[in-house]
Image (cartoon, rainbow, N blue to C red):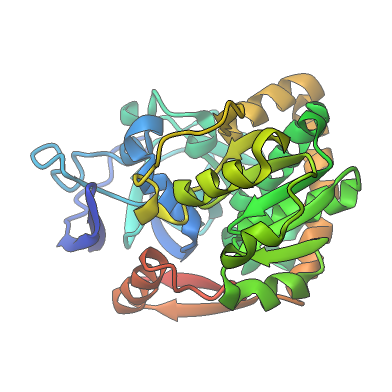
Amino acid sequence: MQTLLVNKTDFSDVALVNYDEGELPSGQIRVDIGPFALTANNVTYMVTGDQIGYWSVFDPATYDLTRDKSLGRMPVWGYGAVRESRFPGIEVGADIYGFFPVAKSMDMQPGRLNTHGFTDIAAHRSGLHGLYSSYSFTAADPSYSEYRDLQPVLRPLFTTSFLIDDFLAEENFFGAEQILLLSASSKTALGTAYCLKARGSARVMGLTSAGNQAFVEGTGFYTDVFSYDDITDMNPDVKTVVVDMSGNMGVIRTLEDHFEENLTYICRVGISHWQEAAKAPPKRTATPTAFFFAPDRAKQRIGDWGQSGFAEKLGARWLPFLGTAKDWMVVEKQNGIGKVLENYKDLLGGQSAPSKGHLFTL
């Protein structure tokens, strides 16, 4: 069997490693992985891998990573099919959705089983946020069959989008009249723009590359869209919140200079411009800035609304958003590690077309 390993300090340095599955231990299941999605969000997982724990999601002993801590496995969202089960209650053939490595297969230790899914309770996951250890049975949710190919590409990103909109609304948009989304063509930004537009409480502005500007405008989610070269064309007198999916601190500093005291809050979410993230000029304003961690916000809202209430509110935005996706995105399905690496290289170079989603199976 084969898996992909990534150098934690140089994401372009990857290695393919063969592994022996061995005998499945009692109480575990063996899952064939795929299809899974690759998006800019996967780059963010790697950039923040040590701070948030994404490098620890999968057992380091499986591929002998305990001896070389410079390597790790990039997490992806996708499907898995149970090939072998030694856990009562989960049958061979069960289709599941969740967090996986880029690999042919994965052994899991299920716990907290219910009709909707289970949690992988393997010891190495004990310190992780529960969101990344939870797996859903796709048969329990009709949306998986109706929008199967879209789910791995959009679902985890849209949950973040929904929670950003909810957070900003609860804070009364920090007194701003408009929300400016950086890396506006990213799928997380598109979902956020959709939710903000549906709420209708503030203007929704997009900032993107010149090459993606027409695509972003065509979605209809934004009031206005500007390119990074045209920042100074925006009205500096409008109170503005920035939602940053890019991590490009040079752009942030330009926005600080442009809006000055009218920049009321900076919500940092993603790092799609990961190579620029470390090139941070000195901060030049007192604008409040915070990193948005969606799992913590989800935990808070589940506490406020209950699990069913959270699912209902999320679904009220999620399903209509899925209905729009056919108008602006095409999902391509490909097989083999060669295709994975080709798309991965495009992601690192910021060359992925925003109008395409990609699903892979090794």
